[in-house]
Image 1 (spheres, rainbow, N blue to C red):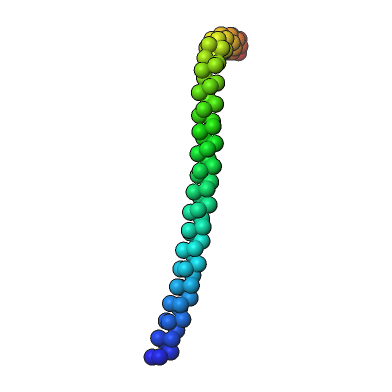
Image 2 (cartoon, one colour; image 1 turned 180 degrees about the horizontal axis):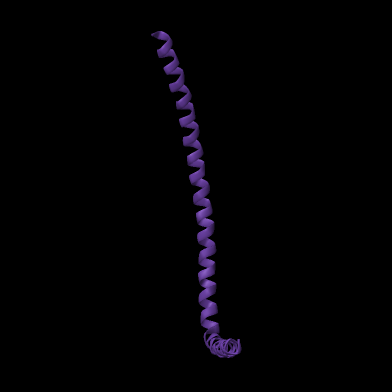
Length: 87
């Protein structure tokens, strides 16, 4: 009976060491994840700020490009339709 209790006690101690090690690793992982999150958030804020500037400064030019793009796409579409008719 004592042998079984000793074995269980050894197993428990091994699991406790593993548990403690994992707790430390999780805490470090959380810190690393938090650091990465903060860096990502800084980058996101920079992106949003730049996007607002670009949207504001290029609003009219973007509309012009959009209209020109629509015309080109319609022209291409008509060419494709014409090709399909001849097939």
